[in-house]
Length: 438
Image (cartoon, rainbow, N blue to C red; front, side):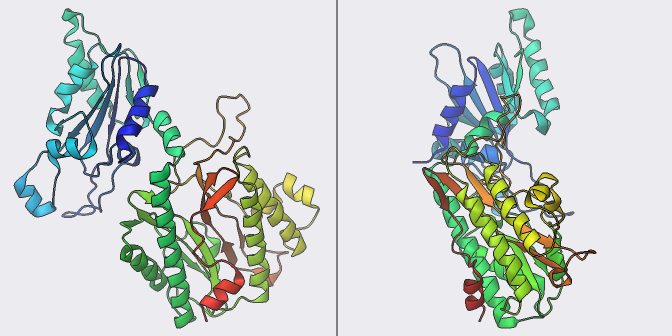
C-alpha cells in the first residue's frame, strides 16, 4: 500500500483544529531560451503526495469537531495537445484515484477554493521561508471581502516545514527499501569506476570516470545523480566541493570520488578514494587506513540513545592521534582536540542526515533545551559517515603527504542495537581496492 495517505493523516493529526495547510511543488526552471532543466519535484510535497508533476499544490484541512479531515490536490488539467508534446498528465480525476486524495481540482481554481477554505480557519500552515506572500495576500484579501457576513481570515500563520521535516527524519520500511537499492546502485557505480581506472591506468581524465558513474546509475534505473559528482584527482582531492572533473590524472596519485544516485526521490551518498595506478604508496596507505579506522570508530558510536555528535567525536579522536603519529601535528592529543588543531587537515563534520535530499531535513540538536545539546539517535534516522583527511603543502608538513586527499563515506540507518549499512557493496579496504583494480 502506498504510504502517502498515512503521512498526510499523521501531519493532519499535528495541526490545530480548524486549520489549513498548503504546500506546493517545485517550479519548472528554464535552462536557456527553449529548454528547461530536467524537472525535479519538491521533496516535502512528494513525501506527502507521491505526485511528480509540476504546477501542483496540496491542501490539508483539519476541521473542528467531528468533521472529516480533507486532503485536496490542485494540479494541471488533462490537455491532449500538451501531452502530444510533453507526455502524459494525470489530470485531477486520475490523480485523485491514483494517490488517494479526497478531491482534486484544476490548478486554475486554487485561489477561489482557498478563499472558501480559509474562511474562519484558525490558522494557515505554509512554508514561510519559500515566498508565496503575494498569493497568500490574494487569499486573505478574498476572505476579508466577506467580513460583513462575519467571516474572518486566519489570525495565525504557522511554519509548516518543521512538522514535515521531523516526520521525514525517520525512514519507514518503504523509504528504507528504496534507499538500500539506491545504495546498491551507487556502490556498483563506484566499483565500475575503479575497474575502469584499473584498466586505463594513469592518464585517464576525471570526466571519463564520471561518465562511468552516470552510466551505471542510469543503467540500473536511477533517475538522476543525487548531486553533481566529485571526481577529484591529485591536489583536487583537497578541495572539498571540487566538481570541474576535467583534469587528467597522473601516475602515483589518488582519485577521490564522491557520488551517489537518486532513485525514486531518495538520495545515496558514497565517497571512495583509490590510487589511479591500482597500488597505494606507503604514505597513501598510512593515511588511508587512518581514515578507515576513524570511520569504524564513528560506526561504533551509532546506536539508539547515543548522541548524534558522538560519531564525529569518535572519528576526530582517531584522526587527531594519527596526525600526531605521522608528524602532521605536534603536541598532545588533549591539546590537539581542545584547540582543534586537527582542523588544518580535517575541517568538516563526520556526517549529515540523508533521505529525499542528500543533506536531508531534520534538527541535529534538541532546540527545546536551553543548552541545545546534540539530539539522541533513534531507530529510523538515516545518516552518512564520512571522515577524511586533506593535506595541502605547508611548512612543517612532511612532503610525502602533500596533496593527498582522502574521504571514505557510507550511508546508514539507525536500527535497534546499532545500524544498517546501505552502501557496503563499494570496495573499501586497501586489499579490496587493489584486487579490484588489477
